[in-house]
Amino acid sequence: MEGSTIVWMIIMLGAIVGPFVYFASLAASKEKSKTTD
Image (cartoon, rainbow, N blue to C red; front, top):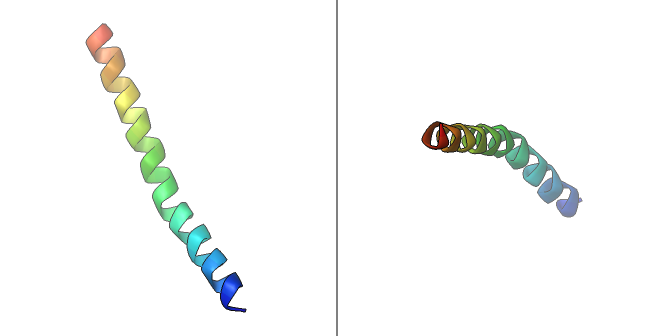
C-alpha cells in the first residue's frame, strides 16, 4: 500500500503546483504580448 501513498502524494503535489504553473505561464504569455504590443 506504500505505492498508492506515493501516487496520492504526487497527485496532491500536482493539484497544488499545477494551477501555479498554469498562472505563471499565463502571466509570461501576457508579458510577451505586452512587449510585442
